[in-house]
Image (cartoon, rainbow, N blue to C red; front, side, top):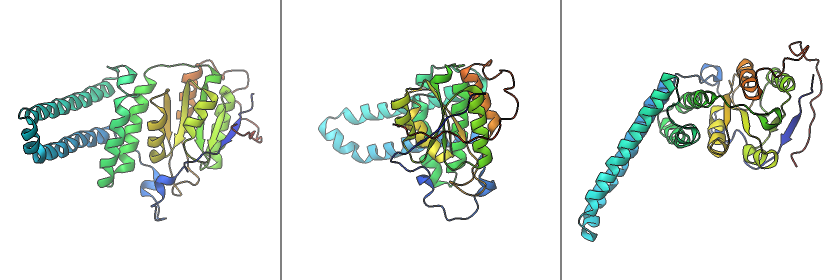
Length: 285
């Protein structure tokens, strides 16, 4: 079996910086922030309402001055605001219909690789005020992955990158390397942030399977998903952030297999345990 290549990347934005305020106490539910998709849709609807209300309040206060400049201007702006609010509400409805119906209604540039990325981030900002950030982000990422997987995209083995953080447990890391070796795809370990942009620039992949906690995954998707297809696998944090994280290895294998072809990795003996071996380290130069 081909040996998985493990490459470390050192870049400038530190992974895990989103957890700088962590107080050291055990995370809720052992660091598992799984949540139903409906949680995201509810907070997304609240985000649209809140954003519209803020803009409406601002317009209410400045309308008299705007009317002094040109009397029809306030009415035009009110109509424009109502139109934007209607479009955002319609978009959220189409998004929910696409998710729950099992059929992507819009092309990816108008869904998971377009406005949805912005909606995810704005909704995350609002969720922080309610103490629900990680759960809402998990639900948002699950929705994103579902929409992306339905595209049925396939790439060559050399066109797929697997990106992982350095905080995986040994068991999780060994599992990732086994899967990567089976399907002959490289694994990149990012010890600091902005990993995706540097890897993309140097390796030019056509798809990425990335592993991170919900907070870092949101940042990574915002940076990368608009440029190329990404599937984001979130972690469980039983010992707190940035230490001994675990992942769903069966989900990772399902995604890798789907991307590089269902017949890949079915060579003779590919399903046998992989002997313990030292991963190859190389600079990302």
